Length: 119
Image (tube, rainbow, N blue to C red; front, side, top):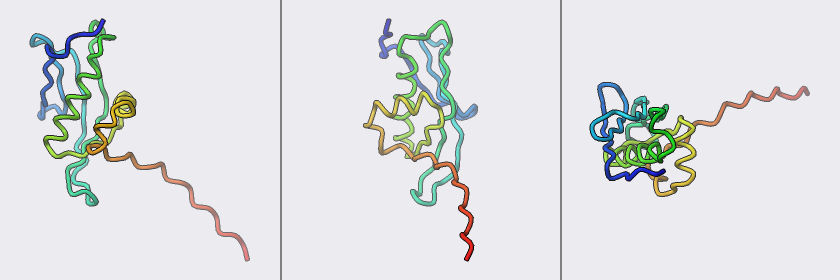
């Protein structure tokens, strides 16, 4: 059963570095983030979206998508670049290309240097 997202309120709790999803005032989900500082290439704050959690009793209602979408909307308003560390956020972004402007790609894992060939 999908829940009407109009009743969901997403706010930024800066003191706890997380977005909070509330239904009728009750906290039912969080999206934790970490401030990576300014990106020299983009000149804007870079925030890693670390984890998305929905209270078990409220699972399977589409609330995680509401939380992530509204959090990305707020990030855009703040001028943040978002690194999608959370696997749920990564999957959400794969299906919601309209947030491309907000996303800062994750760094690729460093490749080991190849040994120089002998002469």
